[in-house]
Amino acid sequence: MASSSTSTPTLTGQITERLTRSNYIMWRTQIAPQLRGAGVFGYVDGSIPEPAKVVVTKDKDGKEETIPNPLHFSKIRYHDIRASSHRPAAATGILLDAISLLLLYYYCSNLSIYHRLLILPYTQLKKSVGNGEARLSELPNDVLLNILETQSTEAATNVEDRLSELPNDLLLNILERVGTLDAVRTCILSKKMHKLPTMLSQIVIDLSPRDLIQMDGVVAHVADKILSTRSPQITVRKLKLKFFLVPSRCLSIGKSVGLAMATQKFDAAEFEIMTLRDNGCCTDAHRLVFAQQFNDFVGDCPDAFSGLTRLDLRNMRFGESDIPNILSTCKQLESLSLFECDGGVCSVLHVEHARLVEFVITFGEFKTVVLDRLPRLQRMTYNIWPCGENPLVLGFVPQLWKLSLTKANLSSGKILNLSKLLDNAPTVSDLYLDFLSEKIWVQPECPKVLAPVLAKLRFLNLDHLPEECDITWTLFLLEAAPYLEELCITVWDHKCRMESQKSISEKSDVKWEPSVPHFKHKKLVRLIIYGFQSDDNFIGYVRRVIQAAVNIREVSLHDRKVCQWCFEKFPHLEVRPSSYPRTSEELDLLREKMTAASATASPFIHFRS
Image (spheres, rainbow, N blue to C red):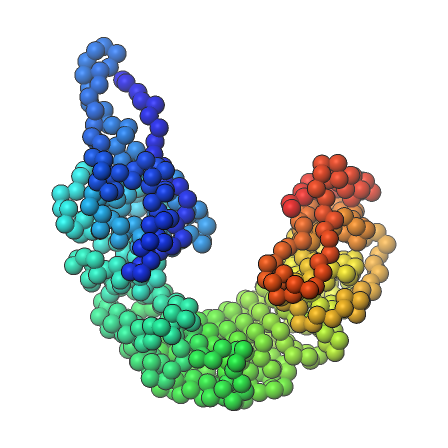
């Protein structure tokens, strides 16, 4: 049989600009070079005819035979046009940008190439997913793309409306990978697609604040239109609505969602509620008004809130009993996020909920947050609390495994004892502490005191340690956590996030001495340092860790992180010159210095600048 070595045209790169009614020129500048580079642009504008599907050739015996044409479009390697589809960031479309391709598919004068890019043989799909019983949306992108590579070579016969040839479940799968508003716009392209928005199992309207202002009322209108015409037999796997706290709009959304929840099945439902004033210009008086408006919203639409699984609020100052009442109404709530929300200056918040899994608090003026009874809570995040000795009290939280705390400790800041904070939460296995490049706000403690609460700790991340401070003190956590597997440290004076721009000399080192002269750690396998420098502070630290961690396998050392905003916001501040090693001689010398004193451990030391 004859063979061919003809090169295969490929489409590469990433389409970052989604085609809309107003950005055709920008969109074309991105996609046209890729089509030209792959040698297929002529097939799009019609200047090059479609190659024959098959060619007649002769075998070694001189007999004629028909073989697939290697220049035909079915030979295009579809995995080459993926934009890193294995990463979550590219999950918005299977092929480049789904909406862009659908629109281009519809408008091009010669549609053959896009017919083959988008049409999926239904019989092949059913065979791949088990007679069609599995949902397309449950398949990973790689599986879908592999199926696309086996597409049919049958040509389309209806040039007027090629979209009508696609099966509904494929169209729905593509549409559900983009925002619902884009999906609705796309469905205008074909009569057959007009009813598809009511068949979507994911309804996601997540616009930027600027777009929400410009498209006032669109969230309420689209949500009502889709939810009121849906079939009760189609489960809503995910509902996410982001909207402003405008009473009339909120009431419309709440009534639509509440009515839908009474007649349809929802796996997950989320409200993210913005306020017309952001935190930068929101006064206490504004927060009181917003809180009252939200309380009225909850009171007017209890059916909607009773089915919510996630709620994101901001810029509200509640009364003492408001948040507990909200939690009581939101019986199915699994995730609650409060940004610039509180119950008044130095208020105490008591939290009880049977189903809450994740709780996030950022800013606010709570003196203390008491987690009285949260039997399913797994993740707790508390960012930027006011000065207080007991910002967080962990009560009955038997499933808590991840705790994240962020605090800028200025001169008047209090020091926390982790043994006291985690007294009722010995289940924590992942601990994140962010110091915002300010003073250290945890107190080194004796391993005998701290070890009982860190018995299950596996991952420890210490972020934004100030550059001028000795980092040796962090070893008290290694001493007290016998099952720690990974230790990550970031040393960085990140000016954008620092609350003070005072002289670095005002910050002092944390005093610590090892409880045992030569303690050993058997479980640590990985040490990661961001901001590594070739000085005694870092070299000595890595050497001590390698000496203690007898089974350590990997040490990753990164240079300082860089933030462009820091240079623009604080151009007058000097940046310390980096002493990160660059040459092979410097790298080898540092490796020798850091491992010379260890008789047992010989980890791989990676310098990742």
